[in-house]
Image (cartoon, rainbow, N blue to C red; front, side, top):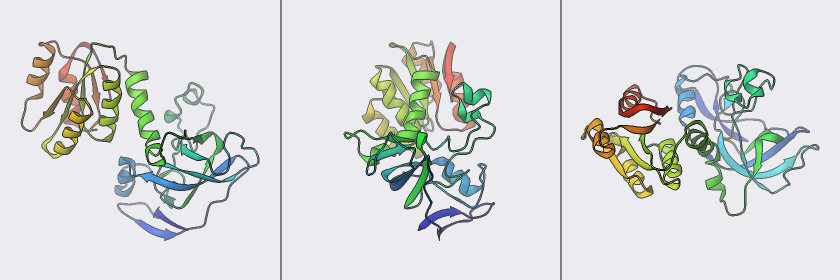
Length: 263
């Protein structure tokens, strides 16, 4: 089968190549990939700024249909639509982080698309506990967003104590910022979304989703807008979703005393 492969270390070194079709083990599920998103991690692997283990097939935000089952798999059936938890492809299962549910910090962790083969291919094989059946009302295109949306859910509803009446700042209106915004709007939280002039389309999308205020930081002073919207108090919570030093500084400056910062 054809797959998009990082075939050796260094900048670039990514090509469409013919690879062997993966085999399905007793505790695994084989999936025919329907949709696979391009994550920032894929770009970092291409640029060799994120740890990777070539040769490796890229791609990890995906959904598809079950085409083969290992003999020990019971929770899904042939033909079922599934989404995948790709980040836990390899974990030790015994360190403090694994035992407390924070497997992302496991020192032995490798995720799909950089540590083991991913889903920019026709087929992918995963452990049975990585595959989740998709409900009928959800399309496979939407299901491919399950992994990044889960990260947004954790940020907004688990790691951050957001309350009705709070004012939130989202810095960075990319996919993660917009997913956080959807959750905040659903919870009735007033949200200020900030980006640069290059984010014009995304800022308008944020407005349509339900942002109370959008800020182009190249044309407006974010501190002034925050002061106006919070009567000088500062925001209650700030979500840094751009991964940029300037964005982080803006969030910290916008916070009120005892405010919460989540990156």
